[in-house]
Length: 224
Image (cartoon, rainbow, N blue to C red):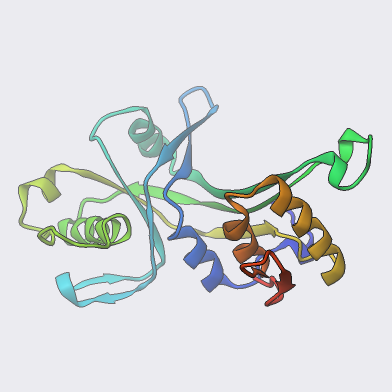
């Protein structure tokens, strides 16, 4: 996707951190008729490096997903490895009357999103499969209370693991960074009035601090 510079997430590390805080990504493959098939998937982004637990060496950053052994997406990958992946976080809808008393086209949304393109493969190496599955568990069950998986386990050998290599990765965010500080606070007051329960979460992303008496101030510039 082509991005306006001020809306682009500049830091790769920030993109990776964002991805690994999100629960669901949308995985796109090409079906037999040339149409995209898009499905929601649990996933984890694992950076390249050597992993001591199972002597697995990753030469490239990888996104891992686990899957049933059969299905359309598996057939699609085997036929055409070109795939896409998308993750987004909707922060808040901004009603048109925040900006104009009658023009509905002024309605807007604050959000973050990442779009990835690259080849996907079915992993055959059980050491790498164990790494992928343990990484998924660390992301989704950080409290532990499970036995670490290893390459000798039947469950590891039987499960299908999909690996996507992110050749192209772009992040976009719109969280008020294009506004002046005073205008950002003005919109924040409107958000606070309309989104009482979710306001703190929204403001944390926007870089706005809210005190107990509902006083708002900018605590940091929202630069990613």
